[in-house]
Each structure stands twice: as C-alpha cells, then as structure tokens.
Image 1 (cartoon, one colour):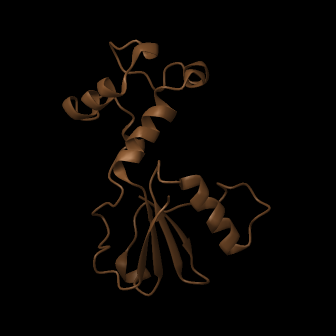
Image 2 (tube, rainbow, N blue to C red):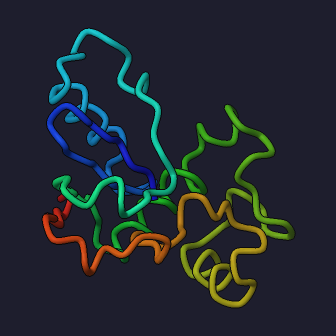
Image 3 (cartoon, rainbow, N blue to C red):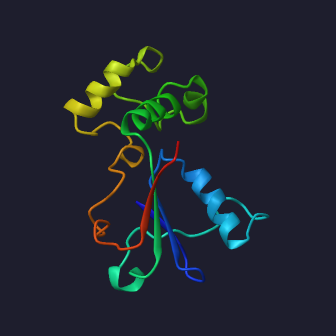
Length: 144
C-alpha cells in the first residue's frame, strides 16, 4: 500500500497498484495545488505510524479484486505492445506470450503462488501493517 500524506490539511490518500494509482496522484496534485507538475512528482510512504496520523482523514482507494486481476492481465501480460517495450519484464516461463490465456494466467497465480508473476501489481489492497479498522476518520472509495 502506498500513502500520499498532505500534512497541511491532515489528509492521507492510500492506494495500491492497479487501483487507479495515476488518477489518485492527479487528485492529490489537485488537493495540494500542484496541477502544473508531473503527476508522480510527490514521494509516497509505504508504512504509516498510527501515533503520527491518528487525527488525519484517511481516504483508501480500492478496486473490485476481479476487475483488478483482469486489468492486470490485460495491461501487463496480454497487450502486444507490452512485449515490444519490455521484452523480458512480463513473461511467464514455459508459456508462449501470444498464446497466454486468462485461464493459464489465473492458474499461474493460484498454483505457483506468484512465483512467475509480478507480485507488485497483484498484492493485497489493504495490508495489515496499519490498523485501518481502528482509524477513526476514514473513507473507503471504490475507484470505479
């Protein structure tokens, strides 16, 4: 999970890959008044310390897990342009790239436990590193 923290207004945006992270950065840039800057110029935090942020509004951006998996497959594993731009980055061993089916992709996720899949795009949306349940001021927003 990634956190964008706006200390001035005590707001935290929380998201993960394949959950509209670019759109979340656009929203954050608008919030802080940086519309003229690169969308990803803000640094994010990977872990929150509860004592530091207990009074902040926490906005968690999530996505339907099934739509997230389909999106990840389509964008990272089945687009023909992806192979040309990143010839080694998103291949699964022993499966020809142009013949990879969604069923084979899901079997790879399930049976090989992310061994050959880029885990960054498919890990849990809400991690247990932070006590979200007891954060008193939070919103959970489905990105769609």
